[in-house]
Each structure stands twice: as C-alpha cells, then as structure tokens.
Length: 339
Figure 1 (cartoon, rainbow, N blue to C red):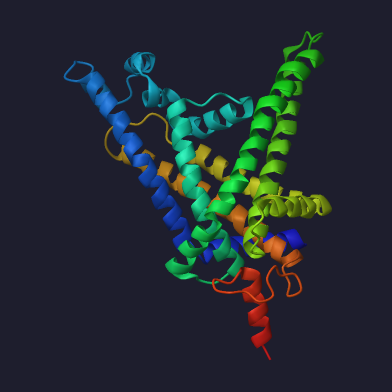
Figure 2 (cartoon, rainbow, N blue to C red; figure 1 turned 30 degrees about the vertical axis):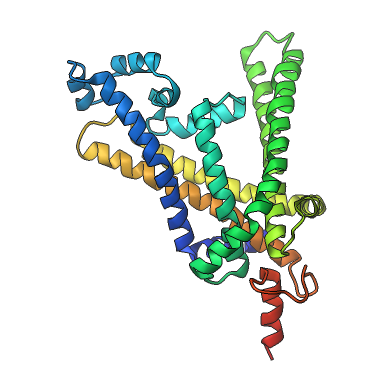
C-alpha cells in the first residue's frame, strides 16, 4: 500500500538525517534551560536555610511541595507534582483535550518555540523533500526563505485553532454534552458520551493539523509563495484522498502512542538523590528525543506520500528555477541528466 511505503520512506528520511533531530533537541534544551534556572532560583529562595531544606534535598516532601505550589506565581506554578514521570505527558494531554487555559508565561514560551519551529520547518521539509544532505548553508537558507511564508500561514492556523478550541470545544463539551446527558442517571453512560466527544474533537484537531502540514509541504516542494494557494491546494489534496491521508496520519499517531506507552512503562516515579535521580533525568530526556523524532516522522512520511502522489516532473511550480532550487525542480534536473 502507498501509505505503508510512505510511512517506511518517511522513517528512513528521518533516520538518514540525524543532525536534524540532534539540532532540534539542542534548541529545545537551550530554550528550557533558562526556565529551569528561574524555577530553581524560586525554590532556593523559598527554602533558604530553613529546616525544610534537608528533607526536600533527601527526596520528595509532598507537604512542602503543596505549600510552595500555593505560594508560587508565574513560572513557579508549573513546578507541581504532576511533572513527575508519566503524569507530565498525561496532564498535558488532559489539558489539551479539555481546552484548559495556559499560564501567560507558558504561553510566551510556547510562542517563542513556535517562532523557532517556524524557521526550522522550512529547512526540515526541504531536507526531507530532497532526501539528500543539504548541509547547514542549504538548511538555513531554506529556513530563511520559508520563514515569513510560514508565519503568514501560522496566522491562519492560529485562527483555525482558536475556532476549534474556543467555539467548537465549547459547543461540544458545554452545550451538546449537557443536552445529551440531561436525563442520564448512570455516571458511566455520561462518561462514554464525553469519551465519544473527545474522539470527535480529536479527529477535528488531527484533520486541521494534517491540512496545515500538507500546506507547508506543498509550499516547500512546489516553491509556493502564496500561502492561501498552498492551503487551498492542501485541502484539495486531503479531500481527494481522505482514507490515504487519514490512514497515514493514524499510523503516525499510533507511533506516538507506542512512545507514550514505552514512557509510561519506563518513567520513574518519586526519586531520591543519586542514581535514581539521574536515571529519571535520562529517561525523561529520552522521551523528549522520542517525541521530537515522532514529530519529524510526521513531516518525513507526509512529504514522502505527497511526492509519491503528485511531485513528478510535470508537476512543478517553476520550470526554470534559480538557486536555491525547489525540491521538485531538483528532481526534474536529476531526471533530465539520467540517460
């Protein structure tokens, strides 16, 4: 099947570009280290030379942690017990599904990361589309070329997600859920209805995410300048192949579920100083790497599928490209040189 080949080809493209994964991980680490230093300073200031410092240093003191959480503000509110082990990704998924508000300081951090990712996405997609090493100059050149185009696309994406998490989420879980479960007397039945609504909402989020992924892919492979045109082309591409694009997305989502299951089995709980603490740190970092690898696998597999479907010699945006050439134009040039 095409989607199985695209899935394997996409994983291969990610595997053949380890520098991309390493670079994305290092940038993620660099963005989070200053935040960790700020939270560490808050903890140090709160403990000082008090008697509570020794029990906290020896292990997790839940009573102190509750007091710290009650007094903390801003970034300090993120240092809560649900950051331990598998509770962290589970809590993130729960907040996403419930459309919970994100603290302002975290919103700022997410915004900064999205700007960085917007720059990286152009280079990543260009590397996967060409399926050969592009070197740092080619990678960052592509990132610069598509940065402002993807920023324009990001404004549209933000509006779409605002409608999803603002209007659609509220209608599903406030209005529709209340009407459907008004006469229920069994809690399990109400839970099943809410679970079904979670599935519906998750499918809507996945569909929107998939469309914007293909819009970026079409912009890079075809060297599109109009993001409105790229988005319309992506909608047509997905609408004409709903089973194939949806099936590939489901396979990639299952890959993420496997990563979550592995982390749930390996994630440490409460740790103490020494080897247990370092083991928890390294397992957590491996999960971050695996999560980033899955995100890159989405890009790689969807790019491979799109190219297998449409990116042939007769389907190029620019018949006479100038450097840097688009991936589609490079394919044309390579095919022309083959006797």
